[in-house]
Image (cartoon, rainbow, N blue to C red; front, side):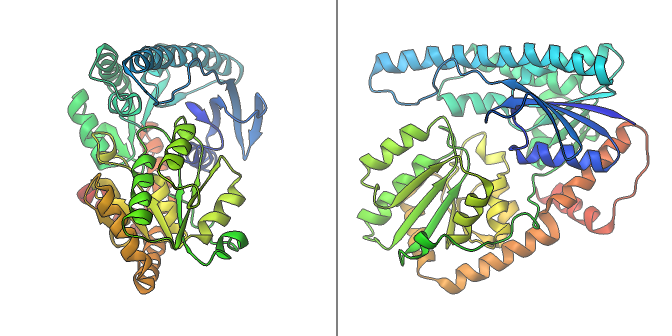
Amino acid sequence: MTKIVMITESPYPEDTRIKNEATTLVKAGYSVTVIALNFNARPFQETLHGVRVYRLPMITLFAKSSSKKNWLDFLLYRIKSSLGYILEYVYFTVTGFFLSHYVNLKYGADVVHIHNPPNTLFVIGLSFKLLGKRYVFDHHDLAPELYLSKYQVSQDLLYKLLLIEEKMSLKLADMVVATNQSYKEIDARRAGIDPEKIVIVRNGPDPARFQPVAPDVQLKSMGKTILAYLGIMGPQDGVDYMLRALHHLAYELHRRDFFCVIVGPGDALDDLRGLATSLGLDDYVRFTGFIPKADLLRYLSSADICLDPNPSSPLNDVSTWIKVMEYMALSKPVISFDLRETRFSAQEAAVYVVPNDTHAYARAIADLMDDREKRERMGRFGRQRVEHELAWEYSAHHLVLAYAKLFGKALAAPPAVARVNRGIQTKG
């Protein structure tokens, strides 16, 4: 049996993409061990759905708050952010290096499958290649652009180092997994690698797991239009744009007939709560923080409109957001800034707003609040698109095909999967 060691600086099984990939490969007959971070006091080692999981303790050396009241706060923020960024990634790279080789010695490994960030993990890939193993690089994020967006810094020395790390990660890999066509094009151009070495495995929800449930009684009893946001709340994720749009909605468009539930954790959560208060939104929004999936589904099932406020940026313009497809799986209409990959994913399931214009975003919310028929039509389209084109089952087959090719096996893609792949290649 071919043995895979996956390494990710994210929680397992909370990270949907990594859980989907690991369980897909187990079902395809591979042995999979995942090395992840321990976010929620889970056991150091356990087996879940056939996947062996090891978890490394998480460290947070400096809070990643983006609050900067004066130049001294800004300077301290820059120093702490950069230093914390480096040390946390070095910690995970070093501990991941030793734990992955322990797993190799104990159970054996034929391939190491590394998910970024951080791109420093390429040194683990190199060490496995020196042992005659294969190295797969799963490119989740453009780390240089993520660094600029998350920490609001300039193209400094660390940014240039991230570009070098990214190039090494791509060049050393026997196979690169990209989340969409935009990433594939960037990977081939920036690293100068053969596009044939890159396979697209899109993020995609499981429609069977994302089914509407009974709505939250308290929310529905308000008699208001319920808005919802799901996702991580970092400085780059646009929740501040959403809050400003809600302020415009309430105080400039004089719409008081809405309530927004904001689901998810993140580095910027405390700052965003403070921003909501300063904008006079305490009666219009609720931050839940991290909640179990059952509660998450209950809140989203209560929503009339779901919001994707990711602003236009070098990172966001080419990224695919799983939350958009999860909204669609629940038959919810979406409002989003007009970003290339979001438009490809959602198509007619979303209303697209001029990027980063919070006044236009507020007007789009108001218009959709007043058009129930359009909301229902968008929701139906989104669910059908997920079921027939974007569900994880289609991406799963691309992943299995890629691994078969990596190990010299021949598998045929079913017609539906091949059709979706052609669409991604030409339209992504």
